[in-house]
Image 1 (cartoon, rainbow, N blue to C red):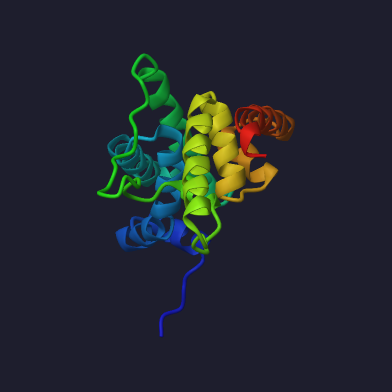
Image 2: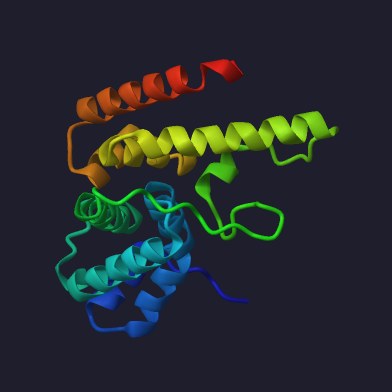
Length: 195
């Protein structure tokens, strides 16, 4: 029976050169970080690259991590900043659509899919309507600025508190609340036909 070690212990050990401790942190958070980055970039290859780069940056600077925030807040901040930088570099290119599987469904984990009801639709009309809504939500989120996209995904998909988002985004809690309000209003306006 293995006992799960606390993040603080793993960070301390990784900071002392324990690669196994850092590997455990990566395994603990890589899916969640990838989900947020994928939600921001809508490009699986880019999201994988950005996520990998985030963990490499974290590994290289883990010895200087002060512990003022939790590890997951710190790694999210690194990943979100890298994703925003990627978006700014690629701003002229259209956002790539997630690869589609045989039935037209997005392959891989898309964080927007986590917003849907887990139970299968009882009839084809609801299934089609749910699919259309998810696609519209994806499109609407894609239209948001990188900062607004990040804050809506961190709050609504990842469930981070305003304080945690403030640390991730390196801005005040008031700015987080303002960005979240703006993003919600934009999404509400874009999705009003489904209300």
